[in-house]
Image (cartoon, rainbow, N blue to C red; front, side):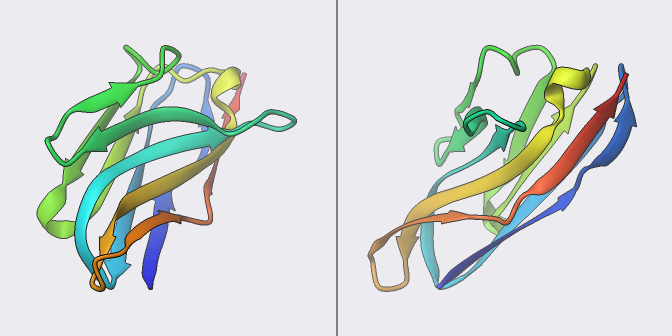
Length: 120
């Protein structure tokens, strides 16, 4: 079983910065991609950024310029640095990890989410 745990988040004023971190653990053989999604109240979950095993990161248009995602593959961790936040960034941020478990089966695991609230 693969476990995904986010940390960070909280309250921040508009224009401020916040960082999130995520760690995957458990029966992991290899990770194919790690990334971040968010879900605002009343909206569907959407991509923020995802990084593949080749260290190539894909950002949502809304995240470009304001977010930086980085990974520490040897430690199965991914970070998200968010700058110049505004109220539209208020959401629950979820970490997603995809790869192969120790049984060489595909897994797609999610964390429980971390609340980010931006006050205007």
